[in-house]
Length: 470
Image (cartoon, rainbow, N blue to C red; front, side, top):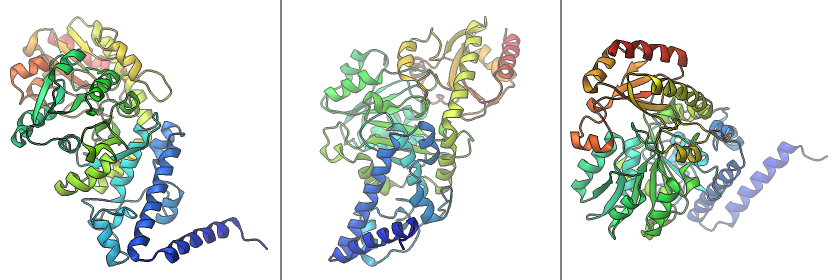
C-alpha cells in the first residue's frame, strides 16, 4: 500500500535534510548549506511573485505554505522579541552574527534581523519588482528619513557630492543641507529638475548618485525617471528615487531603470496612520563605480551601516504595515478617484490661484505622469496628494487654515483620513525664504492629503471655507 501524499512529502523532506547532514563534514559546512537552501527558496518565491497579480503579492508577500506550517498561523505572527530563539550550536551563532548565514532571521538580534521586518521588506521588494526581470532586495528601517540616510550615505566618503532635485520634503532638505556637510558630503541642488541639462551641469568625478523625489512633497513635481536613469548610468552612478507618494500601487521606478527606491511606509503604505517606518528596495545589481556595492547592495547595507547604526523597524510596526499592504491597491484607487474630483473643483474656484495635481492637464508634467503613474490594471491614477495656492497671499492662507473644518490640520499625509497643512510655517518652516521660493513652497500654499471620506463632503467644506476667505 502506497503512502499518502502527506507522508510522501514529509519523507522526501526528511531524506533531503538527512542527506545534507550526512554529506556535511563540519558543523560550519552544514549551517552554510542550510542557509544557502533558505536563500534559494526565497529567491524562487520572489521569481514566482513576478507572475502573480499585484493584489496577491500585496496580500501574501513571501509568506507561503512553509511559513504557515512552521509557525502554525494563517497570518504572519508577531515576533515581539529582542533576540529570538537560541542557536543550534556555538558554530550556528558565530555564523549568524558574522552574517555568513541567513537561515533563520529570528535567531539574530532584532536590531539586525527579525521575522516581521524581513517579511515586510520581502513584500515591498516583490511589489516593486513585479514589472522587471531582475530579482529585488528590500530592507525596512525605523522611518522614511532613516531609509534615505541609510541608502545615500552608503555611497559617500569625505569630499564626495551628490545631485538632487530641490523639490523635496523639508526633512530631506535639512538632512542634505545641514547634517551631511558635517561628514564632508555636499548636495548640489537642481532648481529646475524638469530640465535634464541642469542635472548634467552639476555632475563631476566626485558625484556618487542622483536623487529625486517623485511625486514631490508638496509641489507634486513628476520626474522623467527613465531619462534621469539614463543620465546617471552614463556617468556610472545610481539613480535613487523617493517614491513614497506613489507607492508600488501607482509607480514602480525600477521599471524605468532606477537603481534604488525609497519609501516612508508611514504614509499610504500604512493607511491606518498607526506607525512610522521606512523601506529601501534595490535591484540585485545596481549601477555604481563602487564595486563593493554593485551587487547585493541591500544585504551589504544590512550587514554594514544598518547593523552598526541601528535604525531598525519595530516588529510591531512591521506587522501593522505588512497587514495594511493587503489593501494598498484598493485604497490607492479610491484616493486617486476622490483626489481628481477635488482637484478639478479647486481649479475652477475663483479663490484658487493654482492647483498642483498631476492628474490635471494644467500640471507641467501631466504627460509624464500619464505614462508613469498607473494602477496595476493599467488605468491612470495620480495619487492622494494635491496642493493649492489661495489668492491673497499669506493672510488669506492663514484665514483659510482658521476656518476650514474638514479633516484635520496636522503634519502627515497618505492615510485614510484627510489631513492638510500650511507648509511654509510647518513642514518647510526651517528652510529660508529663498530656499522655499526655489522649491516652490509659496506662503499661500496649502498641502491637502485626500482621505477616504466622501468627496462631496470634502468639496462642500472647501467651498464653505473658501467663501469665508473672500
